[in-house]
Image (tube, rainbow, N blue to C red; front, side, top):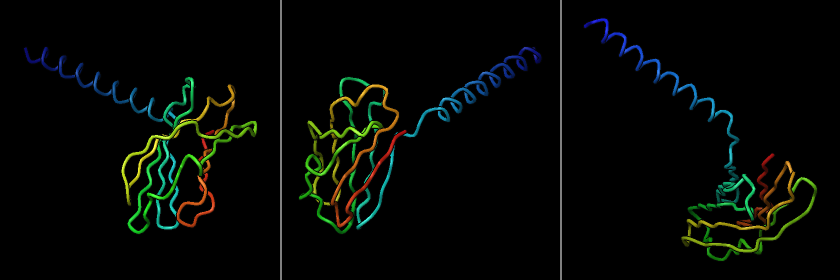
Length: 137
């Protein structure tokens, strides 16, 4: 009886270790999709939402501050996307959430050129910072 319990416990431990190794490998292999830039009292956090290449290109943007009113910034007018071939895209849509010191946006761009190995989201003129650049290779 004792040996059966030992076998079951060892099997369970082996399964747990295998699962942890598989999860760790998949996390290490996945590219980091979030970029952060701080300046002018504002932290911008940008997450590339759909790198699998659907019909459009989407980014979630969070702007956080303790000193700047973020309501006056129009991210659709201040943002652009450049691909690895140098082509520039303007946002087709922006979804806004929040107000004041904590704003969230989803910027939607046309689908970038297929085969492009690089994307750069540029946000200009927020809180005295001339240009914030977020790059995915």
